[in-house]
Image (tube, rainbow, N blue to C red):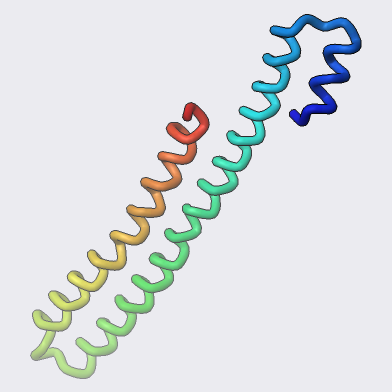
Length: 106
């Protein structure tokens, strides 16, 4: 809430506590809405990770089809790569949870 709205609320006869409460409520709503928008953006990380892991699994299946003898090496490399890629999705989830539950209360 900006200063003009506070002055208008004071001039209309509302008491000081009510005026400051209205200002704090409007500011808190702005912070919460920004935190929710940020959480939504943070969850987009899961989209990229899902696409990347699907591509990696498809490429590994093609590689095993071409060279079945190297199946164990291909699979272990794919699993390590997917685990590293999955960490980006977990980071996005943690950021989203922090924005939803922690940021508005600060």
